[in-house]
Amino acid sequence: MREIESTNMYTEQPTNSPTPEAAEAEKPVDVTNDSAATVEDNSDELATPSDTDIIAQLQAELLAAQAKSDELVDKLQRSAAEFQNSRRRQEKQLADEIERASTHILQRLLPVIDDLDLAFQNIPTEVGQNGGGWLEGLRQIQKKLTQLLEDRGVTPIAKEGPFDPSRHEAVSSEPNETVESGHIIQTLRTGYEHKDRVLRPALVRVSA
Image (cartoon, rainbow, N blue to C red; front, top):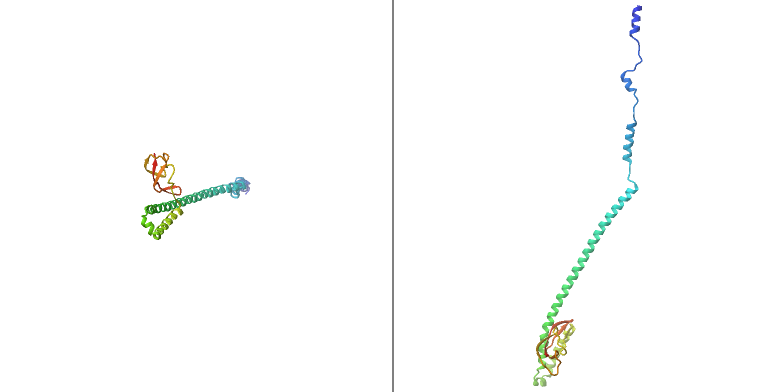
């Protein structure tokens, strides 16, 4: 019996050495890196723009809006100017057409005045003595036509004085003892002006 007990005493000795699993469990946990990463991530999520950044962004948006507004105002002004120019052109074209039509009508009246003038220059003697009533009526017609021309700004060209090629048309040039050279001897057909423009030149004889 003593031998058996001594054998067990040597073979079954208790040990205090920890097992591998226990040793692993007892190792200290390093949480430094994980905590730092978590804090950094949270700081990125919580970061907000500064007041300077917000002001700079608003100023940029304001400048862009102002540039767009200036562009629209410029286009509007150009459109308004083009409209005004177009209206002026149309008004001028209309005025020119009215002026041409008026000039054409006035030119058509001039031969009637010429015929009346010629008729009164060659009244037969017997008509002058016996046709006073109807002759005076014709004179009134002539007067009304002449007044109509004057009201429209038509004036006769001077029948005497120096020859002006822009206002007179010479049918002959001849020596004359009583009229200075280059001056009108006689007006054969009265000329007319309309608003400082020659409506019809006068037909004249000129002293050479």
